[in-house]
Length: 179
Image 1 (tube, helix red, strand yellow):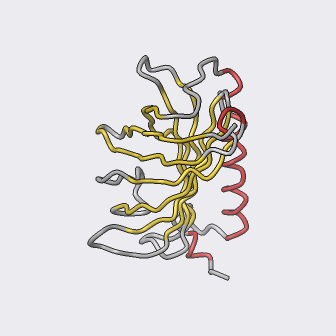
Image 2 (cartoon, rainbow, N blue to C red):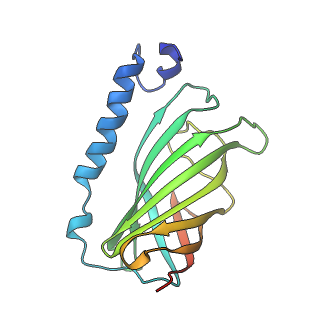
């Protein structure tokens, strides 16, 4: 079991159980504060579509500098061309290596929530510093769509996260949902 300094990045002299409680509280707070229940817009059904997204919350569980096994939890909002929020994206990233040249490799698990269903995806990304306040990647990151609910039930396909500047990304979906 890691000692208390493993979690020092989250807060000074934080003990592991308190950090775990903090992380669970953070996730609960995200879920409770989610505007998904009030969304009227349905972005799309299965097929190909793109949405922009921006990060609205993040917490790091781990050390600074990053170590293998550290985790990052993020919440993003999706919005359409008019700026209307149409969904949310919840990400849990785990550092699986340390690489100063290519960037720290992460395994990334994603749940994208829309008024008409949920899309679940998983992938791999390299970021310059897994514990930066805002994690960026310069190249598109590609993820496999492994399932969904509602209009996206049994979805398969891909989603790419393409950096477009100013902390914004474009999510390009290409998926199929069997009847």
